[in-house]
Length: 356
Image (cartoon, rainbow, N blue to C red; front, side, top):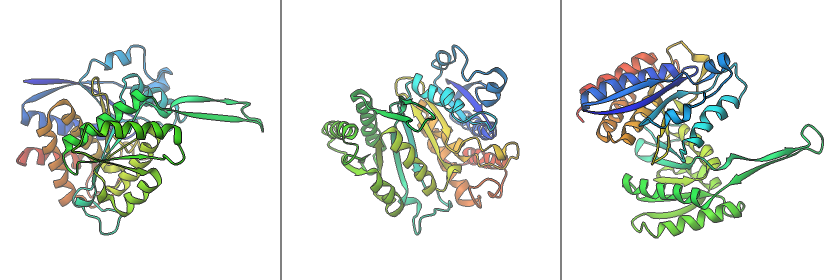
């Protein structure tokens, strides 16, 4: 029997509640497909920080490198100053584990209300590949004369040929494997950000020559945001930098029905990757058993695909579509018509009953 070692970080707020449902579904699907998940839990998050004053203890990064994947709930605590946990846990994990790809599927499932008029599931089915360790989020820059009328703040976008090329190559390979529209769009701002996106554009079209079966095209970030709303069916796979990727994936989450269904992966193709729901810790709902666990369950599906259990991931997605298409009144917390636990039960039920 195949077995996989998974580090589980439930985190803060409603993170433990949605991770509990994801684990419930993973237990059922691993039994059905005959593999084993060895789960090891870590208490990293706001609660631990408030007790100990540390975000990640010494040795945590090296320990996490030994796992096949990381399954994360949410990081964010109302009693911890913004930025401490995000930088000390989330960004540190991404950077030190070299998770240089943020992978965000944007899929409208059956039965989910879309805010775009007349758009159906077949119209919204694309993936954003975001560079995840460089750009404006690299932390380069500084402040001079802070708090005075002469204050200067500089935030620099770091773009290396290595970082840009490996992200673009991943996107071409992913588009090839996906084999849907066989179209890869570079999202940038070449007319204004001429230094950074000259590098991105040149690298993009150089690599494109190695993939003649993939149609490579370009669009400005502002045009992308318009077309996400007007013509989302135009897109297959999109590749972009860290900042623009952060922005358009949130817009993508809204057109697929909201944060309750949005999942993502922080990918190191040659190391350990981390999978999570996008919606955050939602502390106001903590302990009420009302938040939507589907994003966490979908993140579990992405994790299964990544570790090589593709057939089980496909069945999990079918089960989620069954639940959205026939059961939920809404994706919003407290409005689903079911509790968090009941939604997890429904997905687990269909994972057991549907044909692979």
